Image (cartoon, rainbow over all chains, first blue to last red; front, side, top):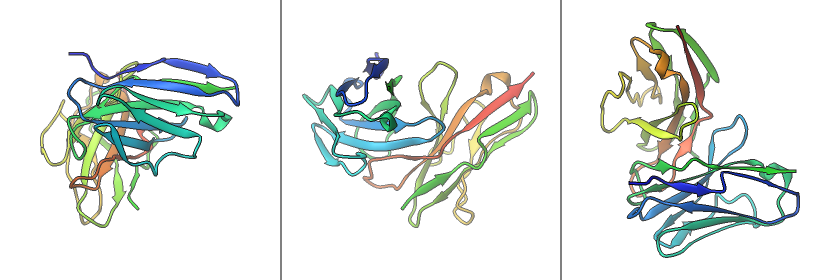
Length: 114
Length: 110
């Protein structure tokens, strides 16, 4: 079956604009995760969903970041008033359930804020 | 707080040589450790996890709680092993997130 997909694959935006990043998890996976990878850095956890709820949002860098998930499927990560430090690859992953299950990663969205 | 350290950003070996990618972690409980790999132009994928105690593509990793390490080893490196390798930690139970190291870029030369 299809793996995790993300769109767009690349996004260039001007500082101050809002962006929406989309993630389609593997069908049947109830857990969904968002990570950020800045250049030369490891993956930084942002938020996870179990079903449609996000029990822990503490990884979100600021209140400009928000995420939602609907229908236990698609998730969108929204960044408002983008800043240059938001430039990174944003990765989405899904797993059968939250916990120590294998996480399957999408190809990522490369965000560049000019 | 949990932390994963991969001390080597770059590692270069010749084909057929042994390879060891180092990973140390900081966590007071009983963690679950993983190695993820990203080949060129491919997505990040799970290589192995310590609880399964498997050998995948000739790679093994042993969790050493005394040294808080989870080094990845392979006795004879192959060119196709060239990739970015990330060590990751899950604090176990119903914990939901992985804490990743910064990664080691392995290059296997012919």
